[in-house]
Length: 101
Image: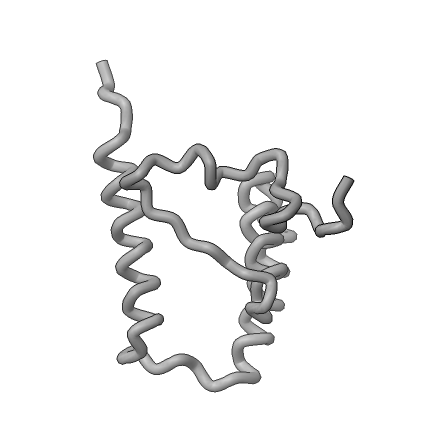
């Protein structure tokens, strides 16, 4: 038994996808040291559960948190890479979509 928190490297979640990632499948990691991490994961859960009201409220909380800090400039390499990963995810998903009959 480990004392490491669930979802950590030492105590992976039951639903951990890292071992199942295809070699060419893009992924994005949100670490706990990111001040928005817990709110973003919670937002993802609300959206996945179809809880639109809770998702809307969480998004409002995220926007309030981000308004307190100056945004990363659009020229930031990290900002540009995040959008490149998003595009790569969409392209990968489209390329791996099962054929419709």
